[in-house]
Amino acid sequence: MTSPPCSASGPLVAIGGAEDRKSDLEILKRVFALAPEGNLEVAVIATASSIPDQILPDYEAAFERLGASHVHLLGIRDRRQAAENETVRLIEQSGVIFFTGGDQLRLTNILGGSPVLNAIRKRLDSGAVVAGTSAGAAAMPGTMIYNGAATDALRKGGVNMTFGLGFVDGLIIDSHFLERGRLTRLMEVGATNPEYLGVGLGEDAGVIIHPHGILEAIGSGHVILIDSRDLASSNIADLSMGEPVAIENMILHAMVSSHGFDVEARRYLVPHELGAILAEGR
Image (cartoon, rainbow, N blue to C red; front, side, top):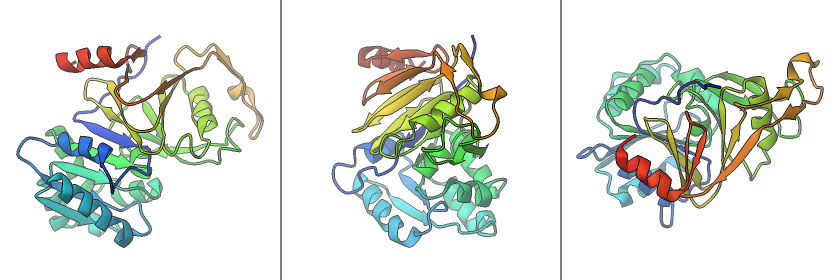
């Protein structure tokens, strides 16, 4: 069976939340290293957060410590601010664009169709790295999870989905995955449309989504993949809302740092295989 291509025009980094911002900065260091050569400016977008003034200084300090020449702190609280020329200009000159956590619906509601989002997409096309943590990661695909208690999942209708920011196709991303018991959320999503690969990001863990459809796990935690492409059967289409979902032949992988996955081939990559593929530039 075939799957939709995992296509992203530039490097994306999706992080599961609670990444280290004080100590060795392992994940943020990988994000910063992906910036285009000679462009050390970073834009940190806190639209998703309800407390931007509390979290932005941490990211400013972290990226300055990593060598950023300028760190632009962008709260972007409403659609008017998402259309401001000065904000667009700061996005256009940044080599790293980073979305904080919070509520992914704030991101799509405020940034959807805005000049700022258009500028971010153009920067991604030009080779800038776009990264996001927690809600900032969940909003990256064309379709995103925005609500649904883990205790209600695997009952029809227990997970709410809507359109995301559209930076990548072929994936559905969930964050705080193991820490908040969200396995059943991605299982239900996989049953509704087996084409899409579920990516469950643990805390202080993430994936680099390379433009050629290779996922590379980073950080100290786990990345869980839910592969439903060869699903044998599910009763979800025949259920009433709230009834329990049955699933046959869903595949789960647990990745750690330096392991990878070829999305198109649905193939797990151990470190030496991942390294060889990345060295080829595939």
